[in-house]
Image (tube, rainbow, N blue to C red):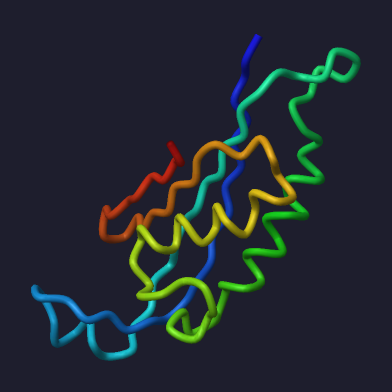
Length: 121
C-alpha cells in the first residue's frame, strides 16, 4: 500500500525580479505571502500505521521556513532568482535529507493565483 502525506506552511518574504513583462514593479523590492506544501510518499510503518511522524515533518519544515520567513530572498544562498520554480526546488533540496520520502513541493501565492509544483523525475 502506498500513501501520500502532505503538510503546509507559509512564509512572508521580499525579493526583486528581472523580467520582461511588468518589469518596472518587479525590479523594485516587493513582498509576497507564500504558501508551500510538501508531500511524502511511501508505505506506512506496519506497527504505527504512519508514513512519518508529523512532529518530525513539522520540525524539518520549521527549519526551512526560518530560512525564508521575513527574509530578503535575493540574499538567501542557493535560491537564485526568487521565482516560484526556484523556491520550490530550494525547499525540496533543503528538506530531502531529513525527509527521504519527500516526493513533491508546491509553492503558491494565493493572492495572485500563481502556483508551481516541483517533483523530481
